Length: 263
Image (cartoon, rainbow, N blue to C red; front, side):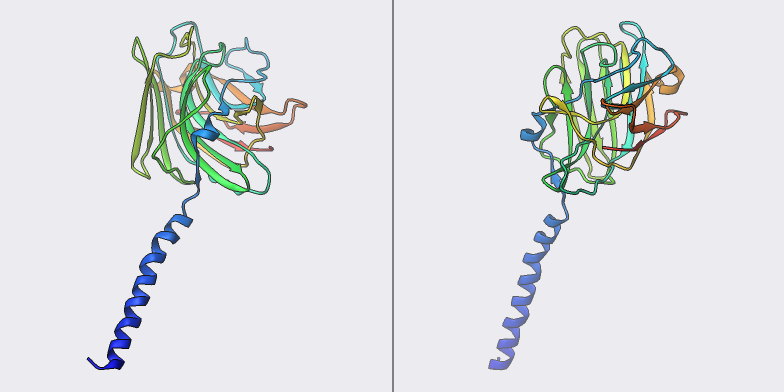
């Protein structure tokens, strides 16, 4: 081989090597920041600021929940499920949070068994994640998973007579996580919820990330569309005023959209 052709061979090989090394780095840069347990351990999803809690088949307000809750007596509900597309968030320098989930209990008592996702702005970066929670413990992040805006999720919480099974599946990324737990102390299974939320972070309700619109589909309790139970509509409002933070639309056939209004 001539020196010229040898030099050409080296040049091509170096270029190919550079491209090969650049590809994983490019792929990594396209993956948004993911929820860590260090972040999750400061988050919780208990209901705050519920106005007119005794109302049934009514519109009520809360300072951190937005969505629908079917309510009843002890033992009324043993399963809840819904699907949604993970919202994307565009972040500024403000730190904001949003969560999307299904759960049993929590509306009329301090128990709650739930699983869902979140879309946050932390340190100016969009941060996504998946989690489960049983009150009074804080949120627990699912490890070894990737969550991105646009992923298709289905979440289910089921009580089997002795334990709660919380399952979250991302059909876009191709993973499923399942957690089994004894449930909150004093659980009653008296409500079933599908909710968009400004979670509690570090003991205070967080500013709500601008998630745009999230649409919940296939929302069911005990196998029937959630709207057949005449659920309460929950509007998220600011604690210092009646200004709306997030507004659910009407529910029909187990589907409704929830729209961000203000942080």
